[in-house]
Image (cartoon, rainbow, N blue to C red; front, side):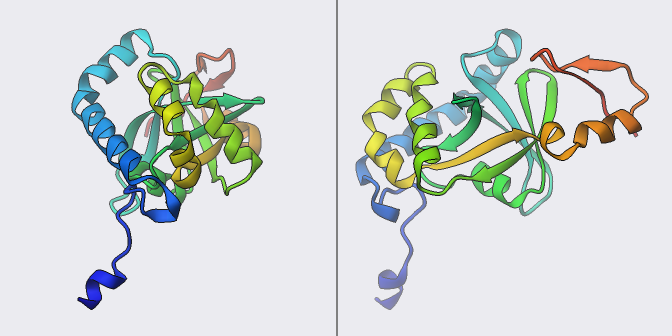
Length: 194
């Protein structure tokens, strides 16, 4: 009986931090369906692109193995954001624990990023309001569940590591390969293959 009283709410259940239990279930079902369709969606994205979809590559917090996730990249006021509307997910915990990650806007070209978890405030609200950039049916789902997302959503501010930390200079010094276009008009060298 005591264990039931001290149990924490399930992540994404809506019980944590005042979210809606209804929307917690809706998002869990929605993301389970996306996980089942992931091979087809990923193949389409790699060949043709898919709205604001991008691929996050981040080391697993327990195994250290690279994990990949297709996410919607949000843009607001010149900044980039990644987020999950239903509280912490595996990728949010991995990104928070990892010292570095990579982002792929157009497959297969990746670039290094740093991510900072947003605390409740104006910037987090701007990121959540930018969810209208998602493709159907995400844009409708996110709009209907906006109050739930404001209560429990986990969002990160994303920056290119090479523009922030001088990582690009490191690549220039260590690379013997010719520059590669990352799909954004920014050229940077490939990492040497060891």
